Image (cartoon, helix red, strand yellow):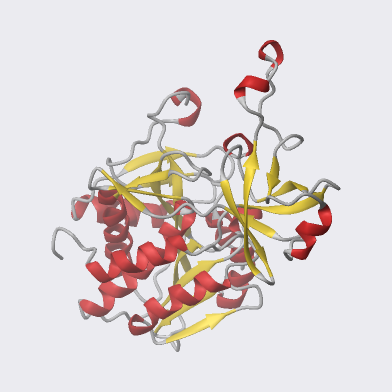
Length: 361
């Protein structure tokens, strides 16, 4: 492979995919974009009733390997509309109330997008001796309506989902910035693995399931469902993890990881050691830089759902270091993106049909 594995078509897809809203529970439009890009590189697709999409190579093979990311992004729900036409919200996933004030929002209705803003009192009007921080009790959305009836005429009602409109940009030539890099970067990277397998003419002797799961942000739900459908033998999951080099992050508790220093390989009870060793050995052989991270109980990613399903599926986690998680300016390094793709690609090529990862073989 050439030094840069991302081409113009890849980056066009990435921008389109990121700019499309796909909040938890409403991922299908993003999944359609993802499947259209993936179509030339797989033999068939599987979808389920909640929106998880799976591209399959060699669907008739008995031995099944999963590579997985998740498709959903954090968002808000309309929870209450005041008589004055202001909207109060609840979370859909881990949305950060502290970044909300002064943000533009898109409210998704049957009539289309309704624009609004998270309002906030001007600095001149606030009590300087008792300034209140943003909280779920005091953040609100203003759509420019004077009362509840005007809001409802726009098609806004309790249960409408709300997303941020922030779009993809590149900083300093090699930093990708957008909302929802967590974890549509995962869907992008596993799609690129499929592309490389096709373009490089690699023939696999097992079934490869490229899985873009839904509803990870509210408890790994999409992965829980699709793993029972696929019943895989092996799962390699990719998600994001925290860059801990920016201010106000304590490395003693969060460990060290930095964008630009390579993918992060995880250690946790759900991580199957022999599979992780295969990935590490492959990275060292192919000179792919990597970092390490430890989780005390759970990874908090879809890895846990795959690992503890179907009697136990050997699973591993390769994470993309990311700054400013669950904000609208999430940031990753292009080199790390390419190296995650390379690491998954090269690891898949090392797996053999029927390979056992049992500690007792």
